Figure 1 (spheres, helix red, strand yellow):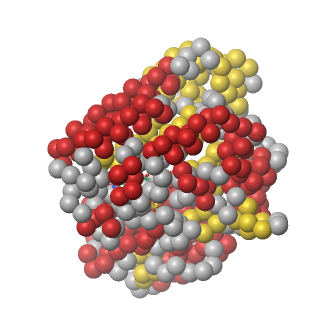
Figure 2: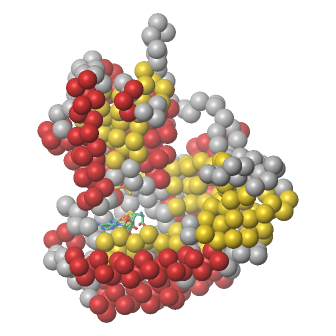
Figure 3: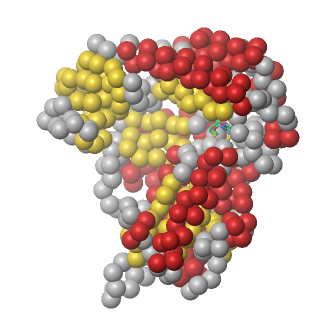
Length: 445
Ligand code: SAH
Ligand code: SF4
Ligand code: F3S
């Protein structure tokens, strides 16, 4: 309980990595809220600093240590400051973090967040704790519920966690554990609660969100069926989901894209490489051709769907020919946007044992791939000019009088009109395309 004689304690959370961490950070802030912590945007006025970390690439993990180093003067000036490390680096390195960074008070892995309240109390009493267990209970059931405060128009909702795919390069199956889905009724209850608080768009999250198989009426439900049920909620106008694995796109989910107006015509479907040899070495369990056929089937269900992806260049053994196959796949699909990364060897993963591609070669490939992806992104955006889209407005833009929101295709759209306010969905005619956003004129609400 908060001590009413003193000012509330302040919590600063820094979030690295994927949207699942963003969601977890929100839930941790709410859980610690029940212990009297209010969030602050400034680390230097905090009583507790929590770093919610990412282990996906070496740079991401090392950033955490440099950020911890930068907290040292703060802790020296204010020894009662508590410092916690959560997320995937916490899971991967556990007690090693305390050895390397003695200023850290608690280390908590992603499946143990429901232990955070006790761990915080221990930290306040001067005790250091580490918890990286994979308990069987659902951590979200044990975290204090979100207060009934109003929310912005969009929200994340984690429905699935963990990954059983074991791609040869990836740490996620080790940091997040096996695939687990939250039961249907819990997801629906949380979605209804969000809608009551002003949310109009929900993005369902999972490391492999389309592997969702939550317990529901009559047995396990897939993501397509879950989306259908969510679409019935009055006031929930838009549904998105991320991230999907190609091998988990089942017929029901593909059909839902053709039938549910609430399911937005946007799909992040990472392929990583266009070379069958590399896909095999990556343990992706599908070929380039199978991916292309899948894209055709999804586009047949929803022709205006915008596709996005992730790519890794310089995976061990990648030849010029393999890389050209990736460029050809990109040409064949035509992406609305994509992330591309230089392969980073991660300790404990099978690929880390193999000889790396020369850094200059990988750099050059990354530049060529990014140039092609940027060109495609620009093309898809330019094609929107003259079209009418629906925009869910979220917040003021950088320029005076401007509002910014997202189209169905997740393009940021800037509009100037008195009716364009946060939470409003309006029809907008696109008039211009800039590198990362569109501009448009209000048509009607
Ligand atoms: N579960 C999701 C996201 C995984 S992490 C999926 O399967 O798509 C997000 C992206 O990071 C991956 O899609 C991959 O492109 C990239 N990534 C993962 N491990 C990596 C590594 N060791 N080096 C470089 N990029 C990596
Ligand atoms: Fe990592 Fe592959 Fe699982 Fe995605 S599907 S989280 S890339 S192991
Ligand atoms: Fe990073 Fe963990 Fe997400 S490694 S990408 S924070 S699942």
